[in-house]
Amino acid sequence: MMRTLAEFTMRGRMYAMLMVLVGSVIPPLALFTPAAISLVTLRKGWQEGILLSVAAVVLMAALFSVNNVGAFVLYVSTGTVFVAFSVAAILRYTVSWQATLAALVACSMLVSIVASLAVENPLESLLSSYQVVLDQQPAEVKAEMEAALQGINAKTLAGAIAFSTCVFTLLGLLLGRLWQAVLYNPGGLREELHMLRLSMPLAMACMLGYFYCQWAGEHYLYWQMLFLMPPVVAALGFVHWFVAAKSLGRAPLVVLYLALPLIGVFLALIGLSDVWIDYRKRFNLQPKG
Image (cartoon, rainbow, N blue to C red):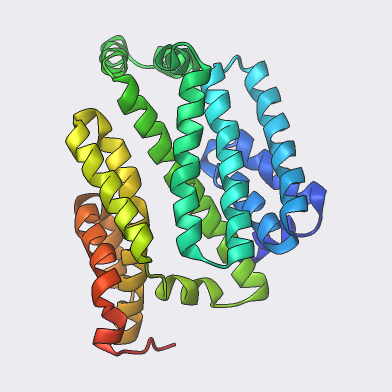
């Protein structure tokens, strides 16, 4: 399936645009949009990537206009396309997941801040965009959902948008990189993630960002989670490496991802401490297969 999707995307511009269209129209397949942009940019360069990104933005603008989607959602969605292209280009030309993760966090923050500043009342715009969904809920559920949404602080909303943009784009980039590996470099993504280890400056920046948000208060919870993304990804890469080196099979990884929401901070500590301890050198193991 992965090879088929990758080959289809790489057949030409129209096929890649069709993948973007599918991702834009069918919510369960939304990852196809950043994945297609990432694959094209990674393989063909920034020129082809920017053409596909512009096409995606035009398509989204047209679809949202027809469906009367609010400006805030439009800015965030088109901003996500910008993030997908940017991080894919950085990964292509630097071949560095550290630089890519740093750019991913920075670009996600930028999209959220710009979208929040561009709209007078972001929360109201967001509510109007999802009014159809709210109207389909039972009266009691609708009232509870509206009350919960109305109680969201502006800083909380901005952080949630930044964090969700980061996660969504990262998943799309990983899928695009996986497609590239399937076609041109089997096992390449696996090797990259197994060896992913944060640099000291990036680790320190993540720690400073996290503790500042901790000091700033509860409204910065999602911003905290955003700063934990690079060390968590690095920790996941290390765990995958350790499981492969010990030939433990897939069961530990299944348990890991099921428990991920509960152990995110613990994984971040592993990713950060690896900067100083270098667990791979300490364990002195080699992945098998």
